Image (spheres, helix red, strand yellow):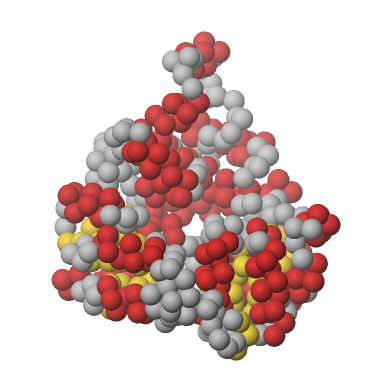
Length: 446
């Protein structure tokens, strides 16, 4: 995790940096926005920017967008200033963090951006076979293709490979090929020269150069446009890249790890993925089994996530009741480990008494808690005549109130990505619907 702090934060910079470093982050600090932009253009790289709210949040967000630099911005400032928080969010910040810094809050923000741990929690024999192969090839320079359904932990496996490789002291740089439009992805990967296109106001170092000496993760590489696949193939074969608008190639030294949740053999047969690129990426294939085929991992991971989110929310880590374990074992887990993580986060927040009961483990398609069919009917009666979109909107806004406007916590409880939540909130705001801002709402009784 690479954190760039912009601003002095009135002396709180040291405390915030130490907390982030203790959580495994690599921290850099500059005093102003111009210096921050210069560092990002030069390939210093950051997974998250924390900006002093006293600086111009809107200017930084607009500059990043104009220069096509994709990095989330979190505003932070002295005290719990609701007006400053609202202004920062409206200007484009993803979150507002009050200072002096709270260790658990900063940890939650860092975790929401990227999961830095390379430790894989597992005891199932099927996963053990994959881990044995991963350990065997990690130290090599071979390109690795990690396949598996969404939510199985492909990026975590990529981080494990990097941590066990000879490049462990170099950078680990991840690019989500599915989340970046094709016209932006080329610049993101290969960089661009000043004036290469509208908005290219300065030289920009791409992810290949940023990852020099380390590992480059091409997440969901199957979503890449075929035209860009050809340029990627050349970069891997020749170990050099061409910046957009550049006049000469740039040598790079990176180890490629790619992931895909698609059947790439089928994509090659359809002509949507280049066969020669497939061969280059698929020197070794690590196929992560879905959670439903790893039954011994379900209770182990559930307890792991209970401990994690109990600590994050400062509540006791309650044991799982036998009934809760039955619910977990019976569920098919179509969302895999990611779904289980979200489920256990909700369970930690909803649990009552001395154990996490079945009523707190709310999984899709599971029967309602005991109480009879009449209760089930009353629970849904108020929804009849309303659209799914209306019910979803009220659930999202109520959850946001419950979380005091904290987007990260609300997304975790809802079991959706922070990006999906923000897109929904943007739609509601544009439709004139009031959306809770950070600091607004009722504090949940836990």
